[in-house]
Structure formats: C-alpha cells, structure tokens
Length: 543
Image (cartoon, rainbow, N blue to C red; front, side, top):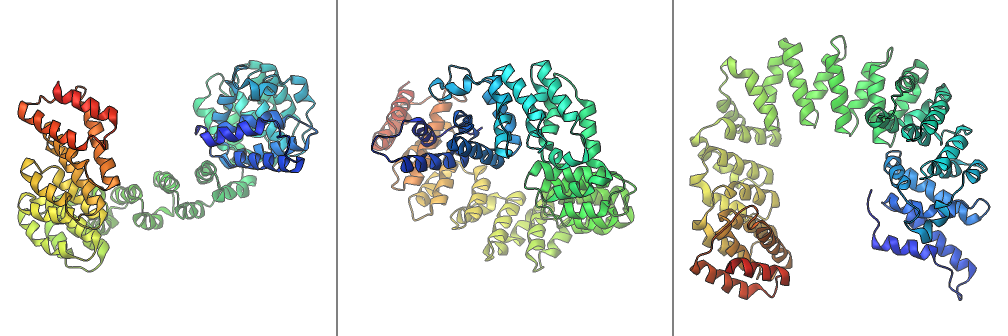
C-alpha cells in the first residue's frame, strides 16, 4: 500500500485536534467533513484506520459521515485492496497510534454484536471490524455479518476463511455455504479476486468444495446474464474472470464471447481467450477468429495466430506467413522466416522490393527486414531513407544500417544523434554506445557545448560513460559545469553512480597526470556538486 504523505499525516492530526475556542460549530464540522472527504479520496488505504474510531459512533451524525467515507474509500480501491488492508489492520498493536486509535484498540465484541446495520456503509464498517487484532472482536463481526443478506458482507467473509482461529474460519465457511444460491451470484462475481486469492494463497485449510460451488454457480446457464455482465465491469479481475469462465461454460455462445473479448482494450484478456480458443480443436469459429488475431495490436496474439495457421491450417499458412514477413514486430518476422526457410525464399530481395512501397507500416518492416537479412551493400541502398521526413522511417533506417555495416556511417549516426526528435536521437545513442571511444571525445564535447537540445546532451552524457570508467568520469565531471539545470542534474547523477560503484563494481587506478586533471576539473565544478559527493570524489581521486 502507498505510504502516507506528510500532508495526509497533518490532516489526520488536525482531525483529532480539539476545536479551536474561537471557531464556530459549523466551521468545525465543515472542516472535519472536508478532511473525511480528502482521506476517502486518498491514494493510500493506510489513512483508513484513522477513521474507524469515529465510525464506531452509532448515534453521532459525524460517525455516519465517517462510515460513508470508509465505504467510499473501499469502493475506490476495489476488493483487491481489502487483502493488504486486512493484513495491516490485524497487525496494529495497542501501542501504535494509541492517542488516536485507542477507542479502536478497546473495541468490544458486545458493541459489534449490537451494532445496527442499516446500509452498505454500516456493513463495511462491521466488515473492517472483522480485521481487528482481537480474535473475539473478529468472531463477533463474522457472526454479525452472517446475519446480513445484502451482499456487502461477502468479501469480508471470504477473507476470514484464512483466519488463524479455526472457529472463525468455520463461522465464515458456514455463512458462505448458505449463500451459494442464485441471488448471490452477482456478489460472488464482484468478489472473484478474493476467491482466486483463496485458491492461490490460503493454506490453513483447503475449501475446495466451496470454491467449486462458487464456480459452478457462476457457470450455471441461469447465471449467463450475470457472467456476461461481468464483461463490462470496471474491475479488471472481474472482466478477466468473466470472459474465461464464460468461454468454458457449457452451452454458451463461444463465438459471441470470443468477439466480445477481442474488442477489449486489455491485451491480457484478448491473449488469454485466444489461447483457450486455439486449444479447442472443435471450435467452429477459430478459422474466422484467426483473421482477427492476425491483425491484433498485441504481438503475442499475432504470433499465436501464425503458429496456429502452421499447425492447424497448413493450406492457409503460406499466405499468412508471407504477410507476416512484413509484420512490425521483429520476433514475428523471424518466426515467419523460420517457417519459410525451406521454401527457397530470398528474404533480402523481398524486403528490398517492398522498400519501394508507399505504405509507411510496410516500409518500416521492409527497412528493418533488410537490416536483418541483407548484406553490407544494402546499407548504402538504405541511405536515402535517412532524409525521409518521417521520424519513424529515419529511426528504423539508423537501426538497420547499424545492423548491416555501421563503421563507415558513424558520421551519419552523429548527425542523427543531434536530431530534434527524441526517438531518433535515442536510437543513434544506442548505436553509438557500442562504437564510440576516446577518439570521438572532442566531437561529442563540441556537440555538447553547442546549441544541441537538452535530450541530445543527455544522450551524450550516456556516451561519455561508455569510454571506460577512468576516462568517462572526467568528461561527465566537466559536464557538471553546464548552465542547463536539467542536464547538470543528469551529469551529477552519473557522477554519483560512478562514485557508488567504485571499489564495488569496478576499480580504476589513477596516474599522476590523470589525478591532476581530475582535481583541476573538480575544483571548477565542486560548487555545483553536493558537498558529500565532492568530498567522496576527492578522496577516491587521491587514494
């Protein structure tokens, strides 16, 4: 869980302060209500326990507001957040935040048994009481939740199946068994991440019969509408589970499920459902479905489609493999060439021919393909694309030339390094990272001290570090004197990394001449370096 910020801690402290003497009752109540709302909207669940002492107040209007704030926070964080919140609250001792949580630590079982549950906010509060460190309080909360039938109690009962007290586990199990009926199917679906957590991580007891009963309930034909409704859930776990279970359910319209899954933005759902369909040899919609899989934006799904064509539909595989030669992803192009290697295809010639096309997507794949399958002469053929107005074309060309014959074209890489487009400059940096040495230091320093963009100077700092531990540090240290704050901060970061690694990941002996150079540069830039860093660097130089 995300830790509490200083601002949140200050709000919590203010919430527990006594009202100022000069403040009106209305102003005090409004301020405390605003704090409740801020805590409820917080990105951290760790603030939630500080609302519980207020939520305990049955007849106090502010207690009702606190319970609603608790409920709102739980809804924002979803059922998954209850798992870590349960573990956190159960570990709170009476000595932790005793000035604020004293009433919570002293909560009695009798007060829980008599707590009136009028809405979901009340049920959520009692549910959080089932997280209490005191086993008697947890037991009372489970007994109280077992008398509810709204569905709000369900996630808390599921969590108590892993309680270290056998009696509490039994009470929760008994209550859940009584809820294995049609009316509770939507609630079980909403809490399916907790059921999955129960299967994967709960080891005190195996509730196989209960889990099987929950899955059987959700797979029943009568619950088809509930399951398909989960396709539109805001909860990612619910959506993923709903699609997988719906596809496995007997008598379901698998094609409709598959098409709905492939329309999802979640790549995991599309890949998982595609994998299940491919395994089903009797599925009549697979042949048509492969066409959609081939055009999916997620490369593993396109790769699965290609493998399925080869294994299941060899008569259609040729066309699919030929098209895959121009796939945007390198792995799929390589897979297509692997399957076609025995058919005598001249891959380099195919890619050269496609380089004459106008479609940008195919052109990018063709240029990359030439780099992967061509020879040194192809590097010269690709040079015109370095003047293309499209950044992606130039970036792909830089990469392809570097694969074919990089040495003669290092000046072109330096030119690309200075590009105003970040991605092109970054690709040139990657290529030059394996080529530059001290011979190029003057060239790089000239670019660095010129009118280059900030991202270019950052890339040059990286290239300085590729000279070697003893040579690169001198240039990086010189760069700390730059006037640009962002570049200077990056240079200092590289210096800090060098100091942190010295005598741990590497060792560099300094000669007298190099030591003198380092001390001279350090004297020029020490004003901008953190004092501790400058002192440690000076110590390492003189060692």
